[in-house]
Length: 107
Image 1 (cartoon, rainbow, N blue to C red):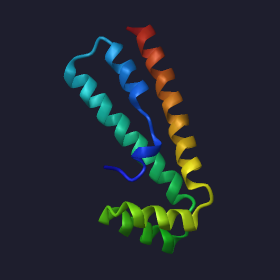
Image 2 (image 1 turned 45 degrees about the horizontal axis):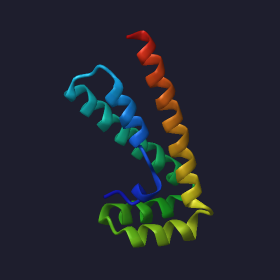
Image 3 (image 1 turned 180 degrees about the vertical axis):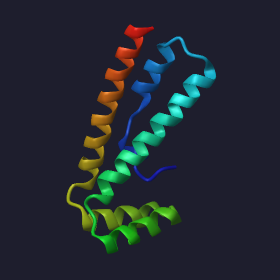
């Protein structure tokens, strides 16, 4: 389980993928790309708010996978961290929905 999963909803994007004429493998691949994009977008948003020393501490907590430590640390270092995570995830989802609509028009 990813430390921010309780904040993020991606089912709406997955539902759009399900509506497309794609093979099971293509849907799975796109779902994995979605997860990866979301993960990198969120980590980028977090790392951009941390000092070099704090980035190392955060990376260590992340590697350990200890969610309580991660959240305690992030809440001490970044104001409104959950709101920031939700905002970047929302922006990415909106972009993905737009891209999927465009892809449907092309097919």
